[in-house]
Length: 351
Image (cartoon, rainbow, N blue to C red; front, top):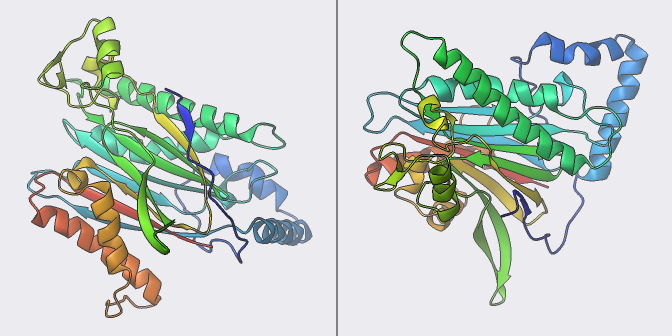
């Protein structure tokens, strides 16, 4: 299986206006912003920089992105999910010359505790920023792929080192599903059983309909390739679980299972966005235990047509609809009987 699989190219594209106006996160280390600040010390240089950046965005027709999140503890005693929404990293790192904007969203579903999911949420994007290609580069796709693979590996290694130093050692683990928007190209990196789904308009029977496109695959030990790797490493699969215990075959953490073939190498997928793409959904398996991907997309799509939605102060009607759809989807999963933690991120895409 090709780790860097690509979705079919959209049938048509369109140029659009302005780019994302989201605020820059403040939790990025100072050292990652140092070079950017040095370059902008001169006010005139700063104005030229901003003008050039604006021109690049307009020329590329970047989609406007906005993230919305809902989290429910369900019947669990502890909330072990974690999430990250960073809609614009452009001003806190040095980007490659041909890139105008970088956006990052992620869901982490912990098991055995919340420490692995929290660690990944706090550290994975910092590692990604430090490893992301800079300056003039060739073959950006290949470098982004390497950056994602290295960032997952490094985050796993760093957490395992920290976990093993504790008394007693931590045994937490976590899934990870991350989406990285590089201008108008979407990269997905996922391991475990959380999912990423794209809602895209498609023509059929003379009318336009919204379809759900899977951007990730589930890693569980019942899949042939995963089971074979575990068995070659000396482990076994009983009752659909690694050693009869662990439900996923790839994760961050889970140090006691790494010697049994459980790995932290994510599945990667690339997708060129177009005006037909409406939103991306990230969610842990607490949602997908009671919703299929198609049902979840249709549920959200229907709520996005609601004219009577209540809005927070300063929210547009569209923002209010996405906020309400995200919250209602998570609540409906609990109502349908999902006993697990439920976390849902919706990322609206507007060209």
